[in-house]
Length: 74
Image 1 (spheres, rainbow, N blue to C red):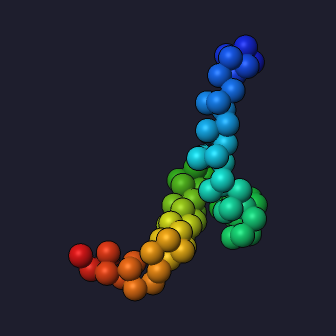
Image 2 (image 1 turned 120 degrees about the vertical axis):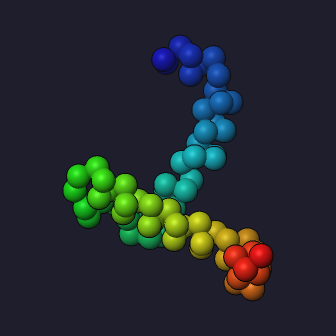
């Protein structure tokens, strides 16, 4: 795995930019360092709510509240 990653450093950089940023944001800004629930089903539910809140927050940042409401009504 280390040899594959060394050969494709740009892939790893792209992954860091696209995938790891939301998780860092969730952990830092939303105080979601550890899961409060136990058992896989409960953790999935907890993370789903956290992801929904993150996506709504991103939508508000990108298109504003009025744009988000218009998109939901359309």
